[in-house]
Amino acid sequence: MVYINDMPKDSETNIALFTDDTVFYASGATNNAAIRRVQKQINLAVPWFKEWKITLNPTKTKVIIFTNQSMYQAPSLNFVNIHLSWSKTSARFL
Image 1 (tube, rainbow, N blue to C red):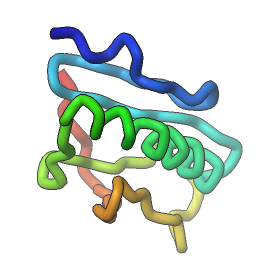
Image 2: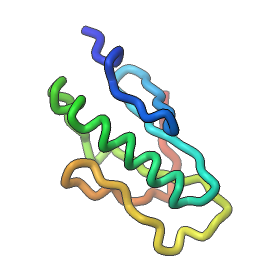
Image 3: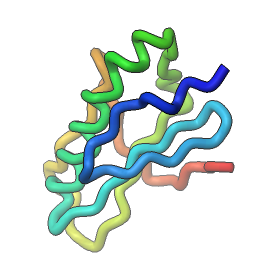
Image 4: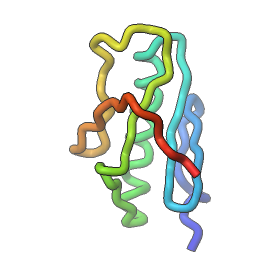
């Protein structure tokens, strides 16, 4: 069954999909601007994931920022009640 055709998408965020992997990504003039955009996309997707009974696996979830700016006090991202912490390693996306 194909689920992705009706996934809500914010105009300032991109979505990459492959099999059961979903990536939300955005750019911004500052780290905080990009983070806010991705959080907005997460918030849009939460009801959709619930409707389709798709669950997040926190042990496989990575949050990575590519920047030359300081990450001092960068806000975290949250998925429902799950705090997504920053990773210093790369993610494998097939």
